[in-house]
Image (cartoon, rainbow, N blue to C red; front, side):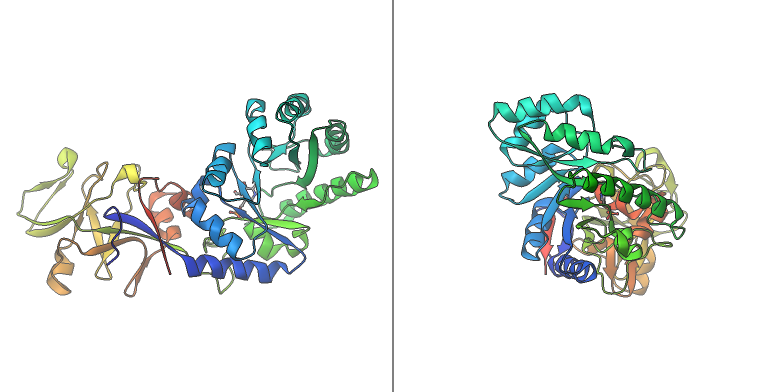
Length: 379
Ligand SMILES: Cc1ncc(COP(=O)(O)O)c(C=O)c1O
């Protein structure tokens, strides 16, 4: 039994992360750089720990969504290349320059302020220019890329290191739209080359594209979900063999009680026992990322069997039915280990399965597990 600092915790497998990074490295080959996507606390896995493992395993760069996430990594001593993929307001640019954090750039009107911010701290600010090829999220229009690169070059404290885009549908079997985006991007890269403005790092591929569109690897790939051993899409873009899920979510039984017919469980008395029952109380709830509505997790594993959730999930506690387990397998006791995500005996609740139950995807399931759930690195 793990002695975690709280009786609900995540176990992050060091060997799984290292294995997955190794498998990615093999897949992309020695001439392509690997950028680990560590946004949202490394999709819930613990950004500092995954960053350290990434550096150990030879990943060359890291990406986050916001400058605050990059600063959190610097604060725990992570040096090396970090790119902020999202929007960074100009008033934060000086901080980015001081900490040598790369920013995504895509708007002409910000360049003057970015340059002034970098000048004010006497540090260059390094940019990766984001191109909108069809995701219609962030990015400069393809026909504005060359003038944009030129404009960046005209600012003495700005440097362009990268040029990148992002696929909207690389996780679908039908790759038509993704390839149309890629063709648009390649035209932009060719135009930049012709103008003598091609930056050293041109990148596009996310995890799904790494496996299904190898021609998009270019100078660097950006992988998130595959690092964590989870499928980009369970049906249309499963990971190849050899990847391992790195995260398990566990909780220790806090109390076991028996119910008589007519006894109710939890707020609102939504569940009322029809027969004598045994119930285990788990110290995990919706303020941990274990949702109450519109759907709850359905069940957890105890003794390798499903223990269904009874009544409403509370903020920090949840009750589960262990009647059958106690009768048929072993009497459930305080301190027993329940599994919310992961394997127990022959049973498994994967992040994708939890996602199906609560109406979302594996990305969402793991990245919504809140910070107060301790992350424990295991072998
Ligand atoms: C711009 C960008 N690149 C790369 C990724 C990594 O994607 P994935 O986790 O599917 O590998 C993301 C995450 O959504 C992203 O927003």
